[in-house]
Length: 100
Image (cartoon, rainbow, N blue to C red):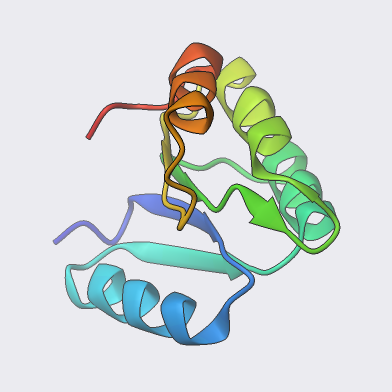
């Protein structure tokens, strides 16, 4: 099991978050689900995570800014978002998102 693998998952849409969190937990990951930029920023500075899964659009800030902070702290990061524009995907990769 992967119970020691800690994932920060930042998503403000509860239905999506419930589904993704359930799959990750079922796979044995320890998931910290947060819904705001502010709470995620605080958690990134105060806790250690093995992976960040981030939404781009949050009610109080940008997931791309969170991406930069996570990558700067050495946390591999994945963007999981409904945004589909090529420029946003390229920006995510430029900032250090993992191509998964």
